Every structure is written in C-alpha cells, then in structure tokens.
Length: 318
Image 1: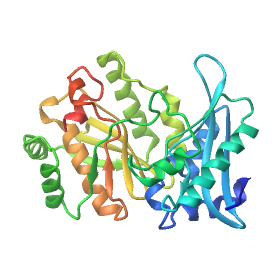
Image 2: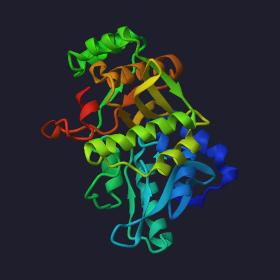
Image 3: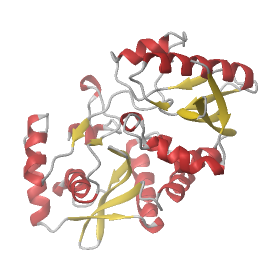
C-alpha cells in the first residue's frame, strides 16, 4: 500500500469532518480530533498542522499535530489520541504509522520527538501493528492513565441500575434523592458567563486543595470559545436557590461525553451536589444526545491513592 501525505487546509474541512463520522472511524474519533479542537491547538501551540493520509485519491487517515515546548528546552510534536482511521485493517495501520514516522523525521522542524496516544484498548491487534514502526513507550501519560466509563442507558431507572451494578457507592442514590428534595437542580449552558463561574470555583478549589494541576484561565476560555458553538462543550451547573453548588465542563462528541474539569463550593456540602450533577449530566445525554454511548469520568484515582486530600478524590469516590 503506497500512501501519500497532504497538509489539510480550510478547503478540506468538509471532507475531514465527514471522515470522522464514517462508521469504521467513529469508534476512534474523540473531541480531541474535531476540527474545532484543532483550531484551539493552533491558537495555543508553537506550531500546528493537520495531515491527511491518502491511498490514491481516497482519504484513509487524518491527524492533528501541535508542536509544544519541552520543559528543559526544545520542542516535540503531539497528536492527541493518535490518527483517526479504521484500526481493523493491519495493512492500513502498519502502512500509515510507518508513513507518519517518516514524515516527521523529514518535516519535524527540529522537534525532539512525536508523541501520540491512539484511542484503542490494550490488547487490540492494532497495538502490535502500530508497534511494528518501533515507537518508544512514553514515560508518562499525556491523557488520563485511568478512567471510569459509564455506559449511557435508555432511561433514568436503567441508568441507576447500571451504576449500582458497576461500583456505584451504595449511599449515592440517597444523596441524589436528598438533593432533589432540597431543591437542587442542574442546567446545561453554552454561556461564557457560566464558564467564568466554573473558573472562579476552580481557583478556589486550587487554593483549598493546595494545587489541582489547574490550567491558566485562558486555557478554559479559549477551548470553550472554539467548542461551544457546535455544542461540543457545555458547562453544567448544580444550583439551589440561585447559588451554584457544583459545576463541570463536559466535552460531547461522537459516542462519548467527557468530564474535563469540575469544582464544587463549600456551601451546602451535606447535599453532595456533585453526585447529583453527574447523574443529571447522564440524564441530559439520554435526552439530547442519543448517539452518545458512554460518559467518561476522565481521570480517576487508584485505590491506594484515594484519600480526601487528592484533587480527584471526589468523583473517584462516586
């Protein structure tokens, strides 16, 4: 299989977006590979390119690449969640990643390495096919190392039963009922003003926890600016009597919704508003995004490190 590589521009956008939605590609396409996230990377990176890989005139793989600084100097290229492609075909996978490697050796502009993290499970045959191009294993994860995925069910009761059967703490349903009786409600928003509410809560949480790995505020503002118009990101707010008790930034694309950032206030903590927030987000997905199959809690804490002082303790306990 002889593949060619082309840098994609604005005129290729429609073809790129259609490619993400092809049935064979959808299982491996995330919000990190949307055109809009690419625009965010372009606005916040040293350099950015989109590449298309073609077999004759047929687009068979795409990737978005951001050049980023290394802490000790120099730079590297990063392709979030790897290439979008049909990972069921060995020849295609091996050929494409081999071409990818050659391309960045020739056109890396002095970067130290290329990092990618394909959205495939360990043990999938494609893992070995990618390894045929002899990549080195990264010392640390860029995306979350350990996540909890909730399968979205058809209705509220089915969702609760699924959660109970997959590790939900036994007292969480009681917390949810208690919050509902107390008048806690949850709404979804695409408003920059509501994003600012989340940012303020993250600032307070960062101080309270002594550091949570918080990004600078423009990181949240800029990605929301690019992602919200298509509904690819929404802010969810749990409120009681006009007071925000908890909120979260959720990415929604393809078959998955991802919990990216969240925080809660010190007020009315006995109502455990974050638990209600997560459950209501799942209900919102049921009602408004039938294509979404799962809710990704993103990064959770290992059992041995699960303690109240850990910044990810709250939703890990869910």
